[in-house]
Image 1 (tube, helix red, strand yellow):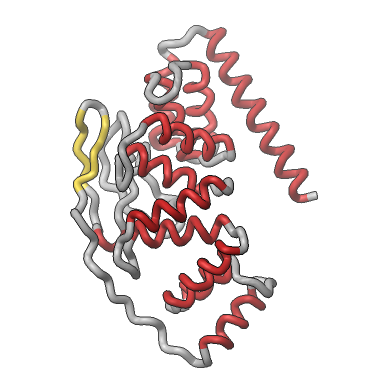
Image 2 (cartoon, rainbow, N blue to C red):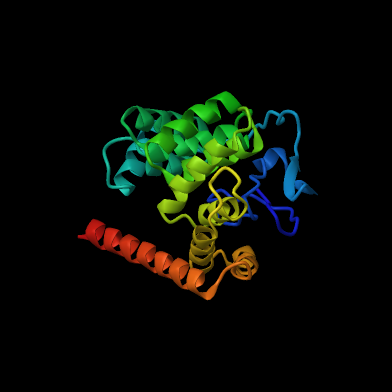
Length: 261
């Protein structure tokens, strides 16, 4: 969501990369434009009560559905349903099949597939919005460690969308995503540490996460925030916070190296 900075209208693309500050998830095709009003330093979404039911025609098929499913699994180098195979079906316009593929993948423990289903039920691009289902799948993904699901679940708690607003719960999920390196979540966590909102006031950690967000590619808003928080800190505090950021980056690099073998 947009938070403590300029108010923007933010469009949501499928990969959630073009985001506003303290991200406001624009509700897909249900809302082509989200207007935000700054109230008490926080932007609140003006959104429809319910998304319209959207009918999306499937792409014409040049082969049987079963053959297409087999083909996409071969392309993904897997013999079982997964987030990727569901997404490949989705991109072909086979939405029902994609949902079925993701649901099967979730049953087999694919948390990325859970994130995809949560996203689809919330964004309402090809199905009617169902917040309960969105929450169900976001929770599966978040508890399974998917940072995208953690980020989105935090956003729902932050805004009180489908759940009672709970900034501490939002902070929990933002922090989980931030610790995995999601720069948007790092920005969000920094704003919470800076104000002591949902997390204990800690300017050094706020600086650390703002710095990580800036260096991670979320500089548009984080740069100004970093400059502002630095004015409230001593040189010693800034040095300590910078060291914390470098330690975090080194640890993440080691994790990547270990994963790549």
